[in-house]
Structures are given as C-alpha cells and as structure tokens.
Image (cartoon, rainbow, N blue to C red; front, side, top):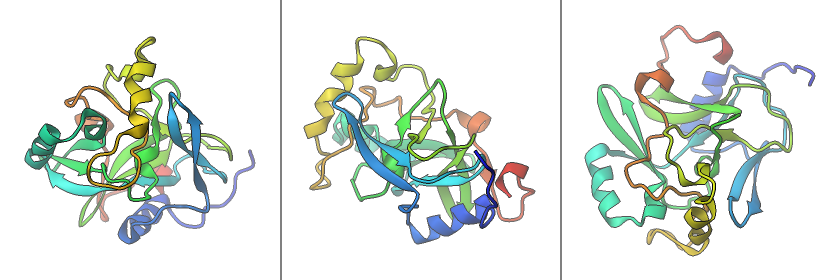
Length: 211
C-alpha cells in the first residue's frame, strides 16, 4: 500500500475527535458479520500505522459505581463496562447504552489485532484505538481485549456465549445491544495495568508513531 501523508498528528487527531465526541464515519462503517460474531467496525479508507482510529466512548464512572452497576446489569450488558487504571485509581467507561458510537462495536482479536488501546488525557481520560499496522479498506478493525477467558476464544463456547445477545438490551436503550459478550462480570479489563496503558499528556514527549 502506498504511504500517504498524514493530515495531522495522530494524538491531535484523537484529542479533537474526543473533544467533539465524534467518530470517523467517512472512514469507518458498521457491518453485520454473522449470527455468531454479530456486528463489527470496518475501514472504508486507508489507515496508516500509528493513526488514531476510534474512541471507546461512554460514561466515565468510578470503579465503585461500576461495581454497583454490575450487580444490576445483565452479563451481556456488563461486558460494556471497560475498567482501566489511571492516576493510581481504577476507573470505568460504561458504554452499555447504544448511542451510535463506533468504538463500542469493535471486536476482539487476540491473534492478529490491527489496533491497540491507549489512554489519552485531555482533562479527563479517553480510551482511544490507534493502528498498530496499516489497515486497508474493507478490513475489520480489531484489538486485543486482554485476559484469557473470553468465551468466544474457546471452541465450543462461542455460540452459546454470543448468539443469545442479539435480542438483549440493557434496560437503558431502545436499541439492540451489539452481540459481543463475556459471561464473566469480572473479566471486563481489556488490558493489564501499565504494560499496555500509555498515558499521553499534552506536554509529554510523544512516541514517534503518534506524531
């Protein structure tokens, strides 16, 4: 694929999209994949390695509030509670409500993901996906959720774990919840501590693949 010149640095791109709470709808689309996998997010244009792709957007809540919601959410809704560690505390993005944002629909791939989640700080934390390699038009956008016991990663459990989600809503939206689920309420931490978390402040020296 021929390399094209970036319009703006990826970090700035991520901050601007996060500030406006908008997605790259001109470069991304949602497609139904199958009754097992459900929907996914696909590129309609090229992304270069290092590009900002999409934000996992939802309501920022404390970890204690997330734990309360896990007691009331169905397991298939609790999967949208994304726990992460920032400023020496655990926080959570609750994306259970289907609000039209794309990041909540990005599927898991622990074998060959084309994106990686990073924390971008712009007053408050934003969970943003950046391309770890070039992504071609028509390719599904994926990242590694972390952990090891997601049911769709175990042969024989995939259908039972996911196929029942298609008619389930979270009681907070009139829309359908995307068919992506873990049956474990506790296993919603998509990446582990500081190993996979990159906190980017405005005045930090940026990694060369983000500028």
